[in-house]
Length: 446
Image (cartoon, rainbow, N blue to C red; front, side, top):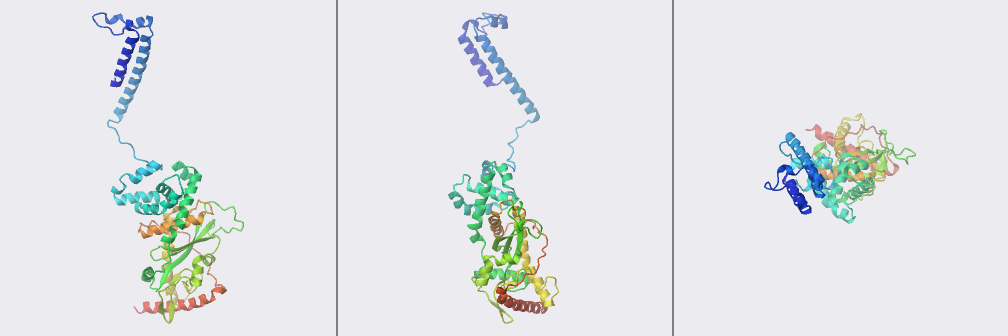
């Protein structure tokens, strides 16, 4: 028997003797024989103490034997005690998150630490800390009942894995309404507070030169400062208020349209989400703030070069779904039916445009919620823009690029030119021809 049981048995003996000293259970060998005290004599005594003692002693003995047999059986199957199991991946409590973030996180091997973090939240631990530090003052001011880093981690987990609020609620043991509320708050902060810092038009001289040189190394075309494209972002739930099927995109599902402009490093410097999936790319572009700033001359491109007598300011490139303008170069022909200089120009232009296609593929691969958006249509734009901000953070930090998500091949129609765009179109047409002839001459002479 264990020491605790023996001590308790001793206390019971002293208690029994104090209650009924005339019926001593264990007497000295010199005064009584061992057989003088029998169970029948205990039952026949007038005192209740012996019966009470044997009842309690029997109960304690049974418990001790049961515990002893359980320990012996467990010791036979596992001779040495095993350490407590690690926290499972599904344990998303605050305590588990705290253990993950504070338990020697910086002493871990950096590649292993960051690979673990990317699998959970879509980005490495240092980038995660950057996001938390920038959002923490705003989250703290909102009087949220959860820690700021835990709230950010929860939302990043949803964006990276595409979980619904209901799925995340069961995983985090929170109410689905609270999950949606926190998601809306964090994505709104990313889309508003961090957007101006991480999504910027390259108007500064240093960045503009770096961008145009990067595109020239890729395409041999001078003064390209960005590539533009649009992509539908699928809505998981069909919109109820869709009388004219304005959300139905060309791929057959409801969506909202995302327009981005990327530089040679696949970093977005303009993002616009203002159109339902049923709208065409050119209409969405004309409704964007970027178009208004370019046509009004609000954006001042200081880097100007001369090509065959044409003053060429920095311009963006796009496919034939966009209108040809002085600040937006598009291919001569969608099917390669032009002259040799024109076909050469088209090939190089589409090579430059490929960076934005890859950037969109990386965006949807990193933030899988954009593959099937499970938020309300009213919150879709801010969620998409938030993912674009996070994409830029990953590109700036040179995070590993995942396998690119590929949308179906595009089959859009050439954009028509509006009457208000005639002057931009005519100058863009002569500029494109000069660029094509200059490119053909330079490459042919090599």
